[in-house]
Image (cartoon, rainbow, N blue to C red; front, side, top):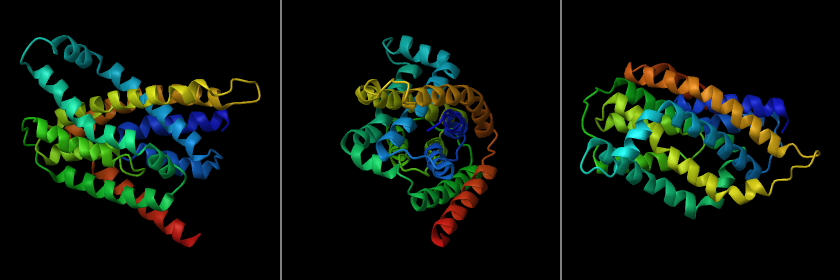
Length: 266
């Protein structure tokens, strides 16, 4: 992977992680279109790295929320403490999938565009349902947090938008739209950081010789994803509050359908 590809893929991740169009799906599509020659393991490594960048962007945008959650966690029964427990509960399904099915997940990130197209169609349908849903502003219970966590685990599939799936599930469960967006973006941060910790040996073992661009490409991709993610996160919060997801739904259905047709005809 050259530096231009790393910058482009980082921008794709920064935009699509927060916009409900599937960052992993678009990364796989982009890698194929760019002719990237990464194997499944290296492709997964780049995907995790740029996801870490957008996790950092999330932490910057929600730094006050994170500070309040941490400082109020040990202060008895309060809203921030309940929110913290909800995040922990939501992590359980994806953590189980990530720990016990890591090898199988890596195989999904090897250019399977038929799967990507099919999952994009599902994402589009979910967004259409969410766009029409009433904002009932119900409480975020622990049971609802677990259900949202299940949708996050399913969103490991490339083509299923993680933000789209978790926000859609939250809104369809009656959770306030603004809180749904906040919960969706914060719940993924511990998981991505955990994945980076699990993969730290692979990252540190990468060659740093002049003949290898792997580590440099990871750093460049990280930086471009982080900077783009800062802008996209703020934009997505505004769009969710205004229930303006129909355009993204149409886009996902169009790109998903186009991808499937392309795979059938080639």
